[in-house]
Length: 235
Image: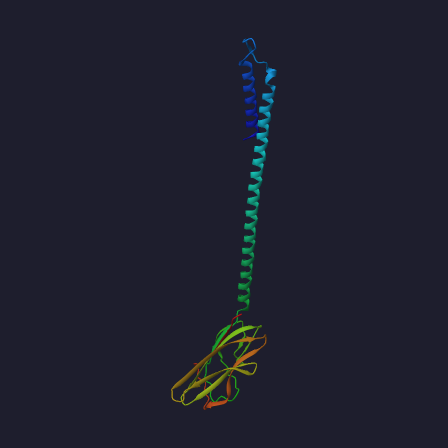
């Protein structure tokens, strides 16, 4: 209820009491009827005005409390939403940075042979010279070596094929030590192929290549053009 409505109600009550005091007769001790004097009802007027003023104050206090409570709830909800939006913006920023990082640090290669390698000797590096993919330019066809551009985990896969009557063992070297062996057997086949793969942890500058694994196998040590060398960075 508004301030002006309360005041109007107070005025209405006062006027009503005033009118009642003027019109209602009062019997005296002799039975005669006389109009009640205005002064006789001052207490009633004051009590009515006091009660309405108190009610008005209580209503104002209640309305003020409800408004403040509503504003507080809205502010809390708004602050909570703001925190959630800020967190989403931060997550989007991090994802964007990761995407940009992988776009600029993407490393992957795939290479094969344009000509077979005949009569390989121990520890000779196979130069896979037909490069189909070389994102990041970490594989070097002239040396047959992959050089890690930075520290991380890398996946490598090697497929070796050899011709009839040959058993050929090749190895994936990481910094000149054997990481895995590929054993291709064509002793009783027209063509024998074998594949192997591995995940390795490299430091920046580490080199990886495919080499003849010692003198193991049955010569002639022949590497067919269907042989491939593939690798990429995981993270």
